Length: 300
Ligand code: SD4
Image 1 (cartoon, rainbow, N blue to C red):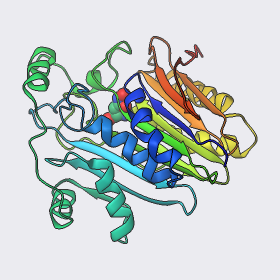
Image 2: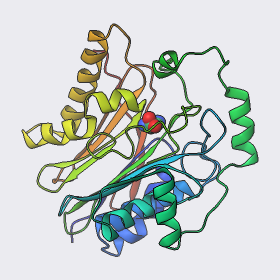
Image 3: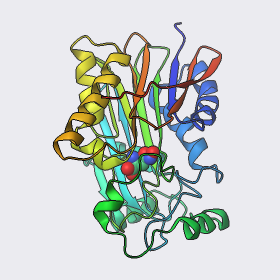
């Protein structure tokens, strides 16, 4: 059997990769492997940007965004603005498997979770509340400034996990509490198929992290997968997407906010790239080896 490949965003991607590896070794399908990895990060209260312990929005409520996609069939599902449910990625999978829909939001997503037997939880922790209080923007801050904040800002980190299983199929998950201090109801790229995640066995898989508004504008993950379909390597495709983010930001007269992409192609090759000063690291496992790599920062 060929070795499976797992790639996940940020240093906490190592937690995802390590939790996912045993399932990959058992020959489980890519989506099972990716969800197991993402869930380990959702459950970790020390990660203040995903699931339990995620940083709350402007009024102190944790609202989660997540999606999943199966590269064999392009089946996909997502939840956005989800409150009180820790396992947003698993719920996104239920949306995919048990409804005719792709995306459920807000109260509808929570009601669906209850119907599916997911426990309701308080997602705030004493630490995330303290961090929220400390980093709360001054009231005068306008939404536009918040959107185009300093790229060095570290208040947002999503876990995106891409997997190629032993049969060669691809699957992916993207899950986050989104931008800290976001407006209530704000939806980022993470639950949007094509923006935070896109997976197609016939071309490759891609995922994103960073300021969602920038990623949505360029359809980031779909852009990368289609670039791989046209023959680019995962690395080239990620770099091209960052260049696209730059050119769109230039047209708008702003510097691009912090954005990073990862990609995996059907040959098991990986790639990653980010905007300047993002300091983006990602975890990769091929077989038994786990590595933490730093993505190149693309200037323009
Ligand atoms: C969002 N893309 O809500 C997410 C946040 C993130 O690294 O990925 N941060 O915009």
